[in-house]
Image 1 (cartoon, rainbow over the protein chains, first blue to last red):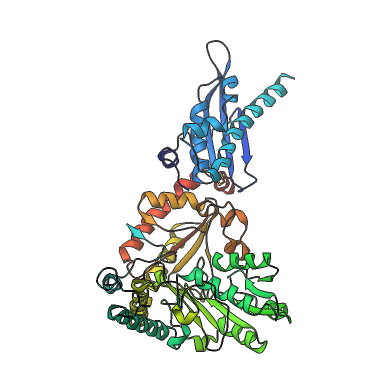
Image 2 (spheres, each protein chain N blue to C red; image 1 turned 45 degrees about the vertical axis):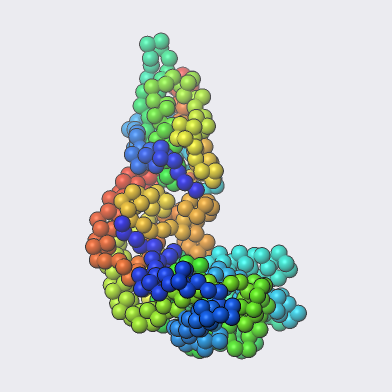
Length: 132
Length: 386
Ligand code: FES
């Protein structure tokens, strides 16, 4: 099994690593198959049209090279997007962006999709609570 | 490049390569033929057989050449099972064997054989009492490795072979990691069968041997011509056999010198890593361990990630962990030692050899802490822990 050049590049120099202090949403997801873990933090702002957008996004990951590379990619894909757009980012998009993953590593990219979703969900449920 | 994966394979010693090279073009004859260039090769094969025998203090007619450690293991285990299937169907092995043994046993269990997997303690030493209790009338074979490839722990083979003998059970040991590294005497070990592999001690790949004690009858696995006294068919791999003989000769002469140097480097590496990186766990037995092997767990990060970063720096090591082996489970050896899943994921193995230099160790000690720090920085577990 071999990683593509792109996976190795993103693994070697991941973007958006670390955490955000006082984030608007946090997604903490784990992979039941291998036990790896990914946390995604988001800061939400507004664009000119008054829509919610992902202003800042960061990750922390305990996992294999594929997990780290997909973490980086999903944060880059989501940054600046509206929540509605970001929600649509799937693990397929991430894998495609990386030029593929070895078959046994496909599940790693699920973490990225789920991490982002759950950060957005977390933001929404917090907001709902505030509005109640 | 810094190569520290000698338990996986070793470079072929140039002196071995030199003696081998003649047997590809000049002396290519098939030893089974009648003419002169064949006869000569026959002699060379027997000379190599003697050298291999000397290395493990066996008689040369107890040595049978095979394609390597895996075939030797398969032959010993399947050959015994088939030969003794009327006597019984029970085999005892350990939980930490190499896959050449484990998967062979798995295959036999599909054919109706019953396998007992003996557990190990936290250092990887097999539970002798468990073996004693597991023995029953149907037990026909015990197979336990001499030293474990991942953690280097050396098993009490002499003790186990005594138990086997008392109970009239054949005993096989996989010595792929020990032959050529430490002195071995089949008489002292008291085993009936022993597997060895050329490329683990500076010989070529694709050649190994099975020691079969005189009088031990097992079924043939590779059927074919009359080679190896009719017990293992297939055209003689002359260059491989000659190379294995040369590697055995060199090992016998130089083993002790090598050990001194390699042990020094391994100990320096181990000490340095423990001093420079917090939260390291050393695996395997503190004393009864191969002098070249260092297996450790770096907590809160994944082994594969560390390995790849080492790879970027042209440092080659290995990990028993999930991702590199193509399975997602961490090493079966570390799990058998009772190491929790998430820690076993961070396992790393450095196995040193005779071409390593002190600068290599210094370089690893300079680079590894930086890699671990970088990975820990993005690990949620590491931050939570702090
Ligand atoms: S193997 Fe666990 S995330 Fe890749």
